[in-house]
Image (cartoon, rainbow over all chains, first blue to last red; front, top):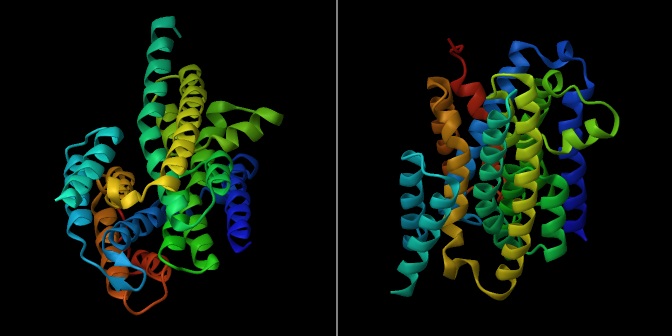
Length: 101
Length: 221
């Protein structure tokens, strides 16, 4: 039940954000300060998500060797500007192969 | 607008859709692994339709975080679409039902493809075809990923390594934008990393927003 609340609220909130940009006159939101904050917010959030997804297991820090190696190979592909598909496949295959051993 | 231009834009736009589809598979699998049903997972992709937010929400749920923390991370990440919509509004010049539809398709990829075009006609072609391409493949691959994730443990096929790599791929173009971005990212990593053992899941990600205050004191050039 709680998950349904989360799903519906996420859908409604995200659509509202998108539509707002079309409905609100540009001068209301288009101030350098607001623009800069909204541009930079994803940088902080995405960076935090990278580290949390890589090493956190709930409240524990878990250094899972196959996961970290798969992530490192994926990160290398990101750095080399590989396409999405290549990044995803390299990270997954590396972690999966290491777990076979 | 000549038709070879138009064809090239259509081809590139659909190509982006196919590539993004790979993330959709990872999202579908991660979402069911986090405890959402296949239906909930597919509805998120169909109706939220903004990948970073979707990954963030299921990531917090998977870590055992509260509904409020999951929603807050997802919405904060989704707020950037408002800026994209403001960039697109004068290019697309949509009204009525088409505006409601255009709003739904306002995401990283469709915005990037639209504003990269040299003229408004091509921008409109790029926007609608990228939206269509990403929407088709993102949702198909979400369904496949959710079904696959229901029968196999996502970790055995390495999908736990894909999720942080996917976030890094979303982050990378922003890091290349400038020094302030790099400083904020690094500060965000430190804040989140330090807080993991001490705060409920989801909080480290939200607290990382403080990186803006700590690292953005020096104005961008």
